[in-house]
Image (cartoon, rainbow, N blue to C red):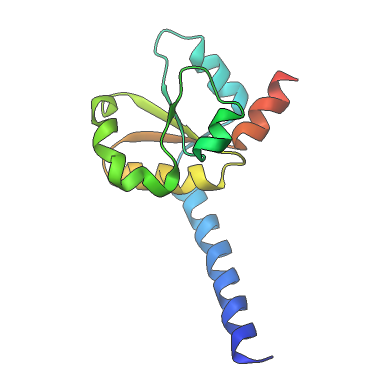
Length: 125
């Protein structure tokens, strides 16, 4: 195996290990738990970290769209939600996992929606 192959393999292993570590660092809700919370008195803030195009193709009603790659620059927009629970979602739960970890590092009460929109759509079908 050449140097490039070894480097790519090492990068892949790093990404997998990091994602497994992040899963243990943040709280998660299943889509059904999010649905129940949306019907409760203390509704969470919904944060969609998918791209604008993905958001246009369908999103949870009332959600805020801040694509993951813009999150650090747009963090001040979320300050008004600092005292509320924020449920973060993406397409499958990977980007939202990273966003949830980032928000928690900045003092937000953020929770990842496991499975993202894929899980939400499966719940609704």
